[in-house]
Length: 81
View 1 (cartoon, rainbow, N blue to C red):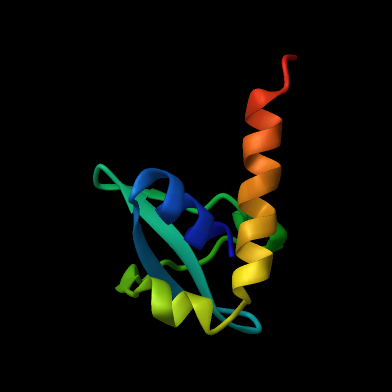
View 2: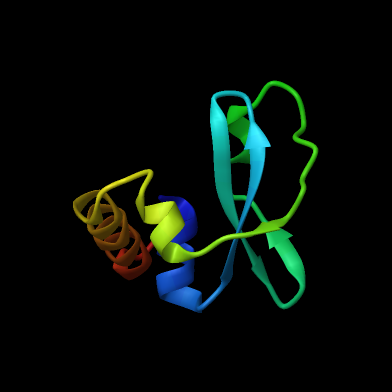
């Protein structure tokens, strides 16, 4: 879900790699891999950087969840602090 939000906000590519529990999605921007939720794994992943798409990543979540995350990001960005 985070990879979808990053793509919508920044136009980033969506990549995937096998991980415990199934495929995990993350982004690449400017040639640099960004996996903002990688800390959820006890061991570092062996990234395969497989090409993916928003439609493939969306199959793992719902549009409502992505929109809720985007709203939270926008509110957080607008909050001074």
